[in-house]
Length: 331
Image (tube, rainbow, N blue to C red; front, side, top):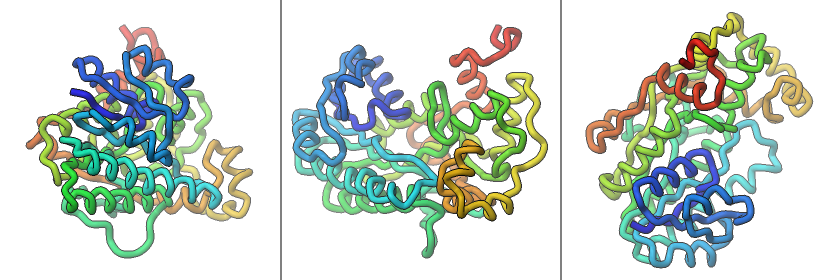
């Protein structure tokens, strides 16, 4: 199979490309800078220079491909107002261009990588694919733009695009530079005297399991259907606790006071730099304070055979791959 992939130099997309090449599929990867995509070149991928705004490059890359996996997106929470336009252009406009080009080219199968974040705050519920984001505000610009992109995918499906939508939850693994990865690194580096947002609820999944789920959706997913590729239901406090147990480090018992962070929002950029947080504290708080992004992978497990590993097993594998386990635990 010849697969056109966006986001191949990213965290999830990179794992997808590696798994595609391991099983022998040809990969055509859209990359902003071929010079910075040496890893993909070494894997034997065909590189197409361009970004999500480059419609001619997207169309050229898709030509002759059997399938498309659109995994590229801008993922960041707590962004300044100046970053909202570029995020919308990438997440919404990019989805329109990639999926639209796939429809125009008559590609046989498309997988669009959405997120459980499009459900918004689930308020302690573990929801499924039928859940709809309630009317009203969004917890972040990322959530809003990904919800809009999800609607683009559904509209194009209605126009005949043979697209399967997958919805990962929180994703972690070796080399993660997202907010989850930074949070775990803060703890491991001894820079977390207090836990920020300990009750923030996520479904954490190892990146290799998410990538495997995306390939299952490509091979077996029913066009027009969505599949949640989440992991175990957990919280920030529980995740830090697992990392602490694996490494022998002591987890903080107290939480970083949210009230203090709220009071400091006017000087967010300065405070964020000191605390290792993004500059827009107001958005960060709205997306994390008492919020849960919990969703069930039961449908993907039943229909695709998707089986994510447990949190302890996944965290252990990540720390082992990064050489961060103590000698006794690594043995």
